[in-house]
Length: 187
Image (cartoon, rainbow, N blue to C red; front, side, top):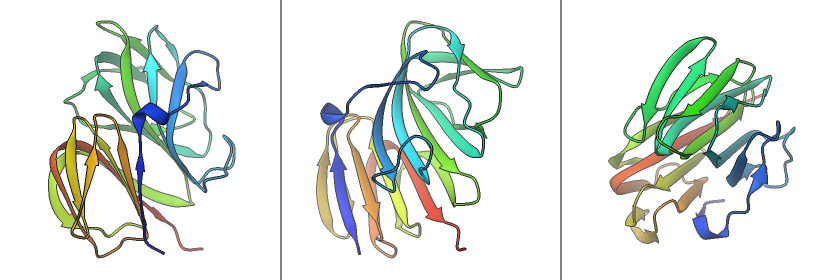
């Protein structure tokens, strides 16, 4: 079944991080009734306002990118200074990761995917292409109209569009967005 859902930023509820060190606002989770321990994939926006460690998520692959602000992300001892225009970082959920905001609090995109259950790719960009993944999540960085299957969908800054079961549909994104493509691994 094909579904297009707009996930409004204003409707996201804050949740404490697993380690208690910060706050995240879930965008989408699959399956929709999954908890923190049994999701196949989960996307969220986190706020990092103080230096500290990331929660451990063994068996999970993570994609991470700054949405607003600048951050020093240290993954297994390697420092990366990243901002809203930089490429997404990827690392295993069991890695030792710490973050330190550089110029005040940051907002950050985080996609977690259960290793062996699904595969994903996450990029920043715009353009048009045919959907080839089971799920595509588009996180708007600014107000824009996204076109999918010939239908125009209005998004405000930080709203998301989740396209499920839409393989073969044409997707057009007119301005920079974060685009996550997720497909299950056949058993």
